[in-house]
Image (cartoon, rainbow, N blue to C red; front, side):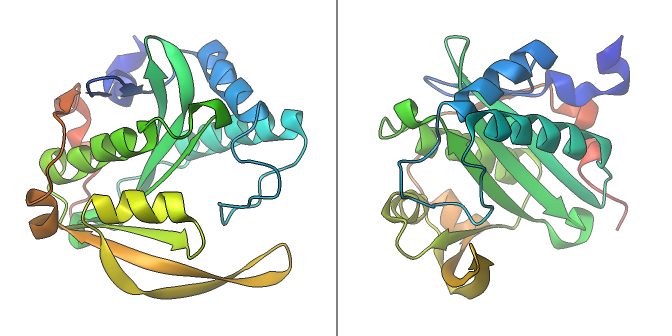
Length: 215
């Protein structure tokens, strides 16, 4: 049985409206990719450091390739958990939780994208809350980090609402031009003081040691 060898398939995060879990099969992954094909940002907006393809088919293919690549590259020292975001069985987008030398550092980074029609409904905040609950309550993280473009008011607002604090800036290149991002950091102490909705974690125990190296 697949989950005997890959128990991450059974990991599930449940909030009031959403379920975050791995796609059940490649057909469900393709349905998530189809959401990306329909658009993840408004024309002229570039909210992601990774430049997404303009063509819908290429955007969908990017989702598939990235998901499969992260599955194949997983180690305890370097992992990236990708989960589909579902409401009532309908895919809304994907989120990611990343750890590097996590057994030593106990820090994570998060990312997310949602289909354009699912923006401005609070799903992004709810989904990131679930990821952070997994990190802090399930995996004993000491901090979570994120990087947000300075003009991305939506993501800036979500991060600060969840207790992130400024942690400097990053300079990168996007479309051949320099771009500045705010680095933000959320500590366990600040997380504990945030008023947040209930999140239920199931299926973590069989795969807990997949996230933590011996250090």
